Length: 121
Image (cartoon, rainbow, N blue to C red; front, top):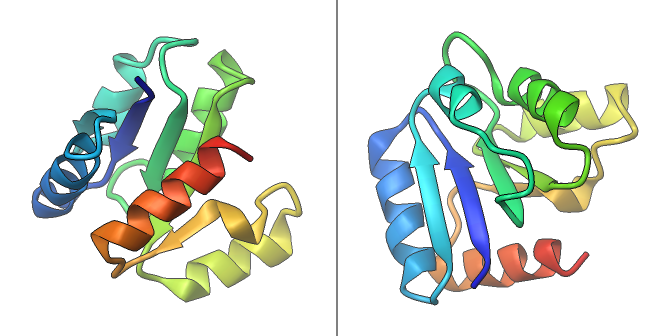
């Protein structure tokens, strides 16, 4: 069973994401705080990490960099409603490929398709 870490500061978003993916037999750990997610992160446990970009205290890009310091192998993608964030960061840093961004809102069906695609990438 694939295991996913999902971090978004909006509790309703994390709950909906968790319910949608667990209904498809994926295991999901979710956090609403970047620092809590990082402090509980264990390398080698997750098949995919999904990070919201806009979060208080530590945004998704900063959390990405911190996770990469301790786990170079895990696949990471971003979940955002702000296409401007995607475009800005994509232009600034070629390592963030456009396919690794999930745009809100997204249907449960499309979410599962994109998550599956990214995990198989």
